[in-house]
Amino acid sequence: MKHVPRIGVLTSGGDAPGLNAVIRAVVKTADSRGYEVLGIQDGFEGLIGEPHYRILTTADVSGLLPMGGTILHTTNKGHFSGPRVPGTPNDPYEEAFNNITKLNLKGLITIGGEGTQAIAMELSKMGAPIIGVPKTIDNDLPGTDRTFGFDTALQVATDAIDRLHTTAASHNRIMVVEVMGRHAGWIALHSGIAGGADVILIPEIPFDIEKIAASINERYTEGHSFCIVVVAEGASPKGGHAFYIASGRLGGIGHTITEQLGQLTGKDARCVVLGHLQRGGGPTPYDRILATRYGAAAVNAIHDGITAEMVALRAQDITTVPLEEATGHIKTVRPHSDLIRTARGLGIIFGD
Image (tube, rainbow, N blue to C red; front, top):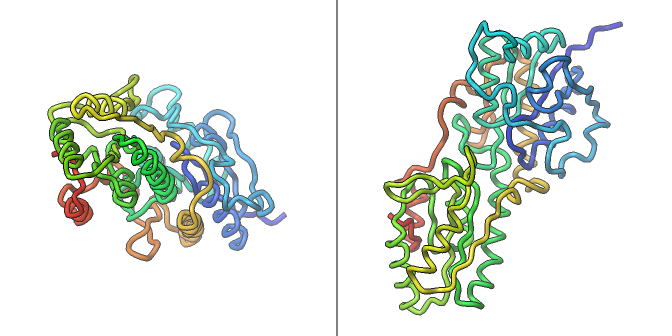
């Protein structure tokens, strides 16, 4: 029987719209190239112990393009949550590497964000043939201009802000919308501008709540009857820190801001936390196309013998960059960028 070369694919970290679109593109492109595809279940955890995988055919990925979530399921690091200490008993990296070798994979496609690509880079240093695919709704992964999932999250957040305009105007309220963004304010900034927000609070620009309240009061004296505030979950006050509802879990800033603004302005203030709604549902057309391009490019890179890299969008083209460029730090909003200056020119308040 003729040997068929194999490619593995896994999804790791938080879910994002477009994961299934990448898997579909990987399988269809691999099929055209003569590869068999193994779908590794539950992220890198599927490479611990007895490998947990399924063979994916083109029939298996039919209809996946518009579907949210991931048919392979995903985990947040699991056994790989801490830094690797080579030589320790039950080293998960050693175990995963051995399974990649046993499965005879010509390449393993790792779809995920900074944490995923950091694990992938470590395995790559050990000799595993890795190609990363950038995924995060926060758009904070360095090395690429855009991650799939961001456009869909932006659409959800913008639509929510649009809807809240009508209820805010009807009741003369301050409406506070909390969106995702632990360390980077891309969703808050883009959705705030697109949705016509009056105040945008992001992690990169610490805020002064009293200055925000004074600006809102000034808006009311000028004849405005409501106010829309968009806040990233990782935003923090000057001299303070981000809000946590549990160890390692951000949350609560939206409600805190709402309470403070209500007290300082005397206005009726309400809060809406979008949370995981931004991750759910099917991807936008833009994310479907970007995810498809990434999946195809990952297979083509493996076919061309390229590993230890991540596919990335640079300007209008898909290319590959070293995994090192996608790890070790995150891509944040520059406080003096043209987008921030544009927002300030529109009268949007950042609280600084």
